[in-house]
Amino acid sequence: MTYEEAVTYLESFVNYERTHQPEAMRAVKLERMQRLCQRLGDPQRRFRSVLVAGTNGKGSICAMLYSMLREGALRVGLYTSPHLEHLCERIRVWAPGQTSGERTHTDDWIREEELSALVERLQPVLEEVRRTSPDGPPTHFEVLTAIAFEYFQQRQVEIAVLEVGLGGRLDATNVVEQAVSVFGPIDVDHADILGADPALIAKEKAGIIKPRQTVVTVAQPDAVDEVLCVVCEGQGVPLLRGGRDLTARIQHHGLDGLQVTLTGTRGIYESLDIPLLGRHQAENAAAAVGALEALSSTGIPHQLVERGLAQVAWPGRLEVVHDAPLVLLDGAHNAHAASALRSALEELCPDRRIHLVIGMSSDKPAEAVGRVLGEIAASATCTRSRHPRAFSPATLAKRLAPFCPDLHVMSEAADAYTYLLNVVTPSDVIVVTGSLFLVGELRLALRKANGRTRRAVSAG
Image 1 (cartoon, rainbow, N blue to C red):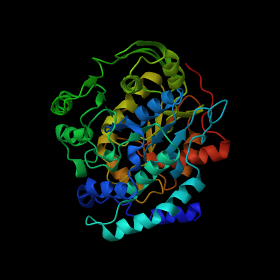
Image 2: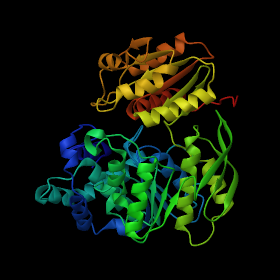
Image 3: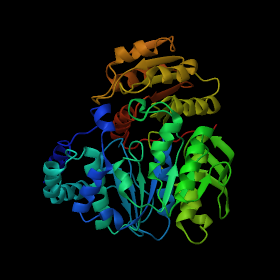
Image 4: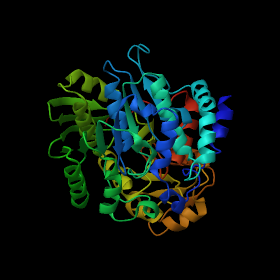
């Protein structure tokens, strides 16, 4: 089976990332994923795991924790979604001594031939489950999650960092018996599936909490914090909370990233450099360090934290790709993420004109994002990714019109980006935002054109 054939076969399973079906998504049951894993011999039981949930920030926390674990002596896996550029980036494994020298873009991705071989080997089981499951065929995400578990077992992974896809209680990743659960900020997103009440959303996400583990969370709104406290008390597990048990003090925040001092439960980690933008990343880093401490029965060497955070990469999240004009890629697709983006822009780019290249998925709250970003934008150019769920640029423009006085429409994202590069001044700022699918397409195009994505940027 070739890689192209494997991808075609995977797409024969319903993919809710491509076809948004709220009623069907609410009807998904965890038992189907459990039966699939049982048919495969429960590969998810062959390694320890950390499960990371939340509305925003969960991917950043995963990336930080994985980057720190890569500096240790364990064989480490990472499973995230969605991907920016390539399906293989979702499943990663790092083994000590795997390569030497500087980290490269794809040095830990599952290879195309490895993915296609796994799909071919698992196909008979997948087809049996497709035929016999009382809850209907597995989804694309369930199948890909099972493949990740199988790959981690095959590569003899000792600890895997797993990002929850949607919600928590019924998510395919929730078949693991994780050692640590981590929560990024919990807010309203996917309201047509999870509802619009943060407390109810928190209860759904807290469904990953199980006995005999440690729970770590960033600082949460009171209603969310109360839910997590109640669930942890009911399960008899400790809860480490950002701002109380885990703290972050920012010493520097510039276009070169953050310098922070983090306080965990077992130590103080001073003057850490994190090459990510946004003050919220300091809180995410504290949560990642708290999770790392919870995995160890002894203290964590400062050098492991220092080297790991200094090399963390999480593309498409306040990522600088050009310096004059300054160009940032950020997949903010809800009000909470848009607020974090706005705060960073107001701090890092004061008195600079900001131009948005924005495309959004049709199930996302365009007005809520427009309300947050419109006030700081000199202009907004509405475009779209090639993703089937994308708003048409004209429809998106109508939704954003009340918030963005200088509004433009361009059907091709690459054309919109190139147009702005040519008309803005070197002191201006271009922000590509609204959708990770849009960010991923433009990022891939830039990397192919330039051979790399990021360019050197002044810290001023």
